[in-house]
Length: 212
Image (cartoon, rainbow, N blue to C red; front, side, top):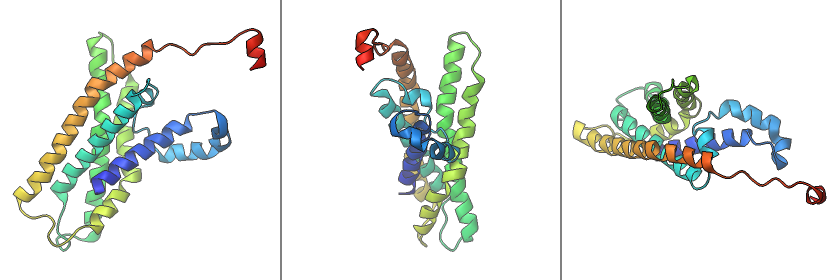
């Protein structure tokens, strides 16, 4: 459950960031509010990926959320303790840091893909690629307390346990993270290429434009 909440919050943050950059329709009236929300909603899913032709925005957003869920689940399984093994503030801070690390690890995927793509093309990587790492950690600091509180509320005296008990969810989360990261690494360049070759919307001129 905490991992699913983390993935949902990751998508919510990305959606708010995307909406804050729209300037059409009723969003113009909410621009000031969205600018404020923009500070509280980091760019979890790169805007360039969300602007790609369908279905790539949905595919990449879903893979990104899976990566966050897997990373958080793996980290939580490693640090989770029984209810009486650690003070509440210590456990809460540990679970919160799992979200920070999950965000940074997930954000590292497009960062590594951007660097690898630039080097493959014989050019220097853009300095903006590194901002993904900071953005992911920023998201964990702002939003990570929510899955941390949920994980803490679900903690029982049976949590923690032996190394074998921790290994199963850790390995499962790591496998989900690796699978999602591989999917992003494959889909992101395809989505970028599709965006570059997508036809521009037609421009109407003359009398028809006047009637519109």
